[in-house]
Image (cartoon, rainbow, N blue to C red):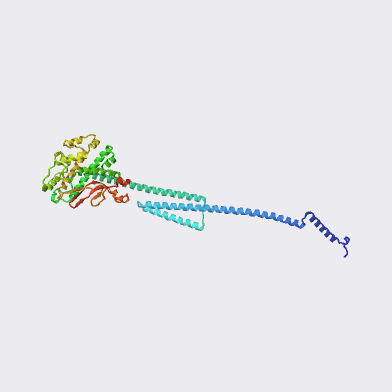
Length: 464
């Protein structure tokens, strides 16, 4: 093959060769082809364009987020305003209902109708708020509307309190008038009781016919005298306790010296211990015909009932004070003298009155004119009448009492403290035993007049 000479090449071909040579030289010098450089420039421009697009996207996202946040804030305000209106409407319903209740007592027709209309109106308002929530219609639920709803709620709450305050004031006035009325009735009852008690103490009349004969005696007559006697005993005990309080006696110690180791259901129950003491002294010797009076002469057995019934009728309608003044040496006067000296201890009399003047008068066969002795004489008269009536029966009535610690029996006993029976189920023992006999019981043939007892757990049993 013939070699190609440079001289034989065309000018066009020589230009191409020169171009190729330049490319090869450039490539050898830089390692980058002209085409690569073009591509690189194009890619850089593309990156710049992408950055511009990215910046625009970021701005658009921020704008959309800002719009979403504003919408959420508006929605939150709308819900708060809706709730404020809801609470305000509920408070209005409460105020209207309170007004409705207040108008019913005293009955007010116009007030009831107005309150009823207001309740219906507020219920309709609640229904409209419900529809607004369901349909997402939050018109005019701005922050201002929310504040206005809160103001309305506070006004309704204040109105409710005002209505209830007026109602309570009305009830208070009504209670005050009831208290005044009950106080007046209580004062009237107390005056009547004092009048009746005064009449009973002054007249001493027993609730039995004046033409009563011994042949017509019955246990009901004896029971009536027992009740009058118990009443006079308690009246004297009350006077004695008042004297003890006035002279600063230790009532607890005094009661414990009479019946020791007794647990009382109430503090006032200690009075039963003093009743027990008085009954022991006054009824001592009751079963004996002469009532422990050694110089008292009695008739024969066949005339004994007639003799005692005559004593009963002689003294039943007379005041003890008047009888003692007229017959200071009578059998009843001897009985009064003996029982007073047994019952009223010298130390007690000195403590009550500062001296023994009353005791000295009694010892001298006279009788003092004091309220204390008058109350004692009335009690002694009724005990004496009970004794006379007991021996007017054939066979005569007898006295009995129960021992300490016995079980309670409804046949023979009556409890003087209702708290003991009501609280027995909750006590340490189901059936509290008898602590002491307060008022003795009586037998008239087959008839039993219950003795009055105090039930209590003894201190020794509690300590166990």
